[in-house]
Length: 587
Image (cartoon, rainbow, N blue to C red; front, top):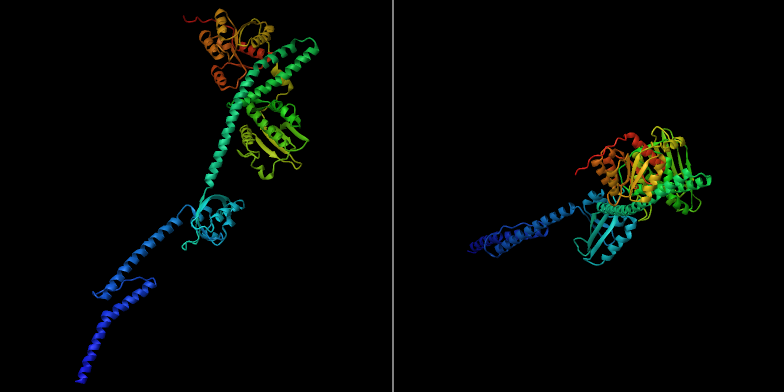
């Protein structure tokens, strides 16, 4: 019985052990193993069966595992999202520690600066920055250092890229040193080089527009003053010429000649002012460079003299004639002489300016040389670039030499600069010749005026009686019968009352101006319209140019000489016969 009892007890204990192992031990072992795996980062569910306490614990553990898995998946998605945002952002994102060492650089660094993030990580941020910007960046970082969450103020600085060029960056950021996930100052930097260049270009254009507006206003004023000076100058030049012709005594003739030369110089200056003030299309003709140089030196004579500059002019005789636009070439030499004058003002006396013109092979060469400070070799290749200037703001636009180069090259020539070892600068203008030259004898023959044939009847129309009488006095010695009309209305009355072989009329008159008078002559006396000569002191006006091109009639520019008037009148009367038939006016 004892052995039977012990055997039954053993069977019972074995059965109980098996039951405990299957119902309690194995679930607890699986649960403990799952807990150990979760602690190691490998979260997995455990089999859950039964409704006992262990089953409830397993179900709770499995629910927790499910939530942890969902959280981990969400964290992985969020982490991937932020990684994609940072790595594909156009801006450069940096993380620097409290000592200013770069701990992280986004991949966009290579796209912006051409350098890999690895070359920047572990190095001080300031090492890559322009030396002039170190203080500003260091101050911005110092302002947030030690202040968690403090925002870095927007700061501009220059960074050297892979090619060695300086790129402008604008950066801001936040102090995240106390954030264990960051442990640094997060910097967000944007490349603003193109925006900087655009702002600079806008500023240059604005300054250029401002300069143009000032030049336009000055040109308008200059044109008005020059036009008003032309009328009295015409009288002075004309009367002095007539006095010189009629004077019997050498002393009187010499005095008249002195007056005429001075007045003609004033007339050249006024004409140059008008050329500078009026913008017109280029007109090519035969140009004598020596006369252009004389006109430039006439205009600048006072400024050169008051600046203590000694001018030496070496112009060879019988220079070749150049085919070009006289006003544009005048602008070139005026720019070069003004530049030389401004350069000489920077040095002590003696100040010397030398203007040389001579034949050079198939053309001619003009040199404007000064003994000023010269041009540094570092900027010598840039002086012809548009808007490049070494002058202070407001003292120059930087377009003078660029415009001069364009004009010279459009004439088939070249403009170069040389800085001799002895100092100073020499600007050389080479221009192709037109295949001929005008010497003193040719110039004299060109100025000689053939006399008009006698017996013509002329009508002179001008609202200024002194100018009208001057023209009449110039032509009466040739035997012409002359009537004077002080305005277009009186001229029409005289035309209706008599016959005339030619009409000399001013263009600007208060009642009926020259164009209106001409159109009336075309309507009523078409044959006479072929012998109308216009007189004006502002031939460069766009309105005058347009009307002259439309009518095809010749122009006598103020101030004029008796030879100019007689030559033009003789040419026009010889070109068309004197047949004159008055047209009946419509009733």
